[in-house]
Image (spheres, rainbow, N blue to C red):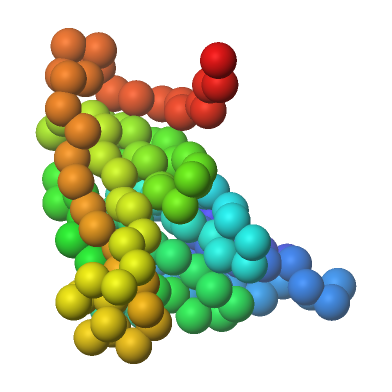
Length: 140
């Protein structure tokens, strides 16, 4: 969408206090969300938000977007799941699966000033299944 409640918005808006507010200028579609506490993760086709690079995945805290560092560079993220301090992504990109896990006390984490850094890795073994459109936690 390009507007919400008469407010110009490029595919992302929030309804707060009885009115819509735009949440950034994205250059592609948002296809999925995952939430954890006050954080919302977005996945999709976008490569930038408000002119800053974000490859297919972004973290939204309040009204501020944050990068998870290394990310998916081709294709589209179609599903997100946050569990056990890791964000899992599925979609139509090489390998079809990826994850970011928060690691405390690493050199990257300490240099970021937050005490934790997101570590990215692709998940192999899904190539024969086609694009992943949904993720679910399963406990035995």
